[in-house]
Image (cartoon, rainbow, N blue to C red; front, side, top):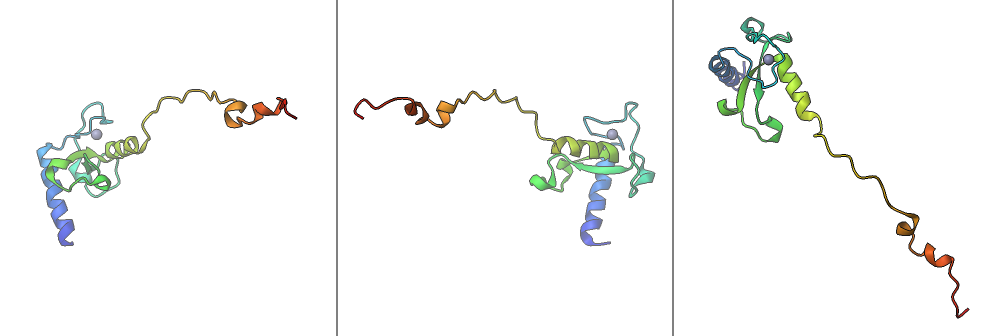
Amino acid sequence: MSKRKSRLRHLHSGVYHRAAWQCQMPECLCPDGRKIDRGLRGTDDPWAPTVDHIKPLGTGGPDSQGNLRAAHRRCNQAGAVLQLSPPARPKPPPLTVTIGDLFPDLGLLGRRDPDL
Ligand SMILES: [Zn+2]
């Protein structure tokens, strides 16, 4: 195991211990408060332990205790999807551009120059 992996594993163990193996995701998908199953560590099981970065690594979040929380794998993935979804934006107002706005000279076409 590399030094970094070993350090992360140690760090993550601390996160699970601090959380008493409870999922800390605000939107935990387990309604009955099911504990994170430490026996599933390293597996792809939806209830396996994972560590979530509160501030994502991609946006400069550190690999430190203060930025980590324990999560079920499925809750962590659902949280990631929520973060990737663009925020809901208000609907833009309907277009009210008229032909005259786009081509102001068009209005002149119908006019006759009195000097001609
Ligand atoms: Zn959960």
